[in-house]
Amino acid sequence: MKQLPAIWLVLHVVCTMCKAQAARFEFTPPGLHPLAFSTWPPSLLGLYARQRDPARWWLIAEGDIHANGHGENIAPQDVHRYREAFGFPRTFTRVRSADITGDAGFCPQCDVPYCATHWHATASGRRRCPRGHDA
Ligand SMILES: [Zn+2]
Ligand SMILES: [Zn+2]
Figure: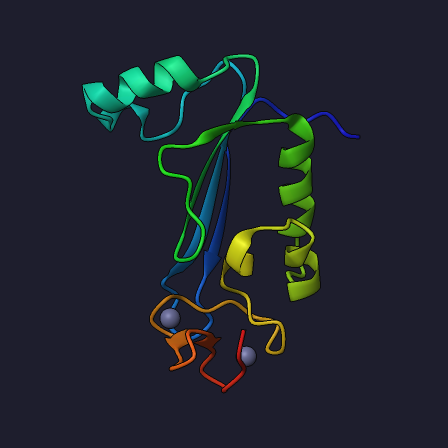
């Protein structure tokens, strides 16, 4: 496995229809703090200080279906897994390999991502993409 550089890695997934954010993943290397760290309130900083393992990576996941709040410790192989999954060309099959709840907004049949506005909830509690596919 290739050594990852010690800089932030941010993966953006935007809706194919409107370019709104479908998902965002921010990876903070060991020894660094998340990008929004300086804007966090004291209560959150305290929580983060107790939870953060400074020897590990930190992931903040934002999405309609999957989010992890202020973040969590993750292993280098997780960073690698996401990086591979969200490489280009970005396809549903590739993204699926990251094993994220909601697949970062990707429709399996369209092979593109949609935001929460463009995924419609159906009466049966499923989600339907703008082209009528159920996920
Ligand atoms: Zn679709
Ligand atoms: Zn949209």
